[in-house]
Image 1 (spheres, helix red, strand yellow):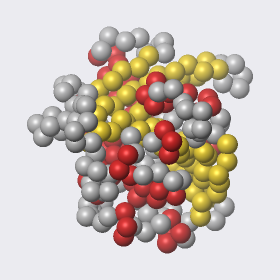
Image 2: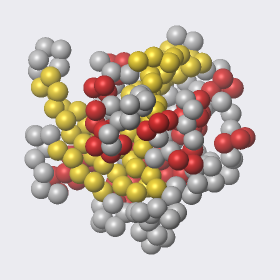
Image 3: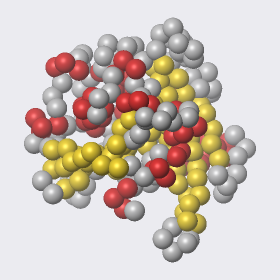
Image 4: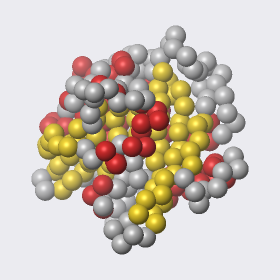
Length: 241
């Protein structure tokens, strides 16, 4: 289970310099001394939380499991499905921690790694629509998910989900209040042209209950960001973004 947990530690770096680099000038993971292991099978249970958002899975659509490695260390595990225009982070650990919390295993930022991962899987940045995080254990994000749900009157002791739209009063706080969505903002700024001017259409918070190995109930927190482009339904205007 530990290898499937999305720690969201060092998930995105808030103060990284924003650039205008296009995908054509980006550096692949190999330029940072990393390698990609895969493809491999993706258990359906790991992507079930995405299905209400991606819709019914076409017969030829599937998620493929990959890992990004630095020597024998797993830095990232992710699932990608170009057919569903979807990418799911299962695990990522880019910061070493310890006494020097900003020491990194790699200089590559996760937003750039995501772009390289999605393109390597055969995805098209201009149609990329769904970005998910599975089994979040980052305390900041979990606390935010729980608080927003409770403010909406939901019982977080039961399975539940909510959508946060650009027009909702919580949207700005949610976008800025956790490392995942802050990083998505950075990705959309840096790759604006390559992503076709994509903006966040909605953010979904999901709480699920699952039996652990010893049959003890376990609470899972997931997050889904849905993107949209100019001219599409739900594209936010300047005042709501």
